[in-house]
Length: 117
Image (tube, rainbow, N blue to C red; front, side, top):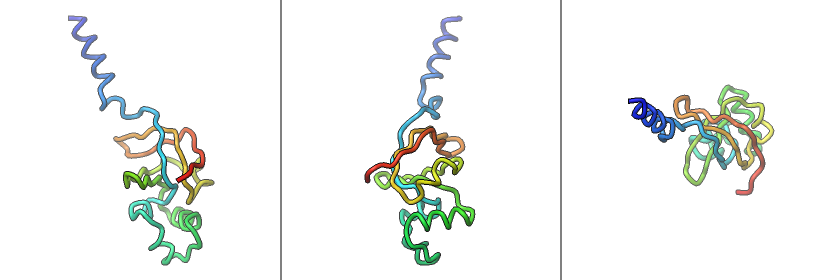
């Protein structure tokens, strides 16, 4: 009986659903969530009079929008938990090492670095 419990516990620990918070690498552009959901800064830049992607992102975040990472290859938007680490990279293409929590739908940043498109 102890062997069955042990095997069941090991299977649960190694199942994909349990490992939802594993460290991974994410690549994309640091944007604000509304622009990331549209996949572009174009509309907001016209409305806000922003001069570039960085200016647009910072204006939208100042207005209350959270930072997000937009992956153009998959069209996936990852809302970022916290802003301190990513704010200097607003409007830039980056590579983030961190964890994505499916239950809260937040990307937790461990490290960030500029990346080429």
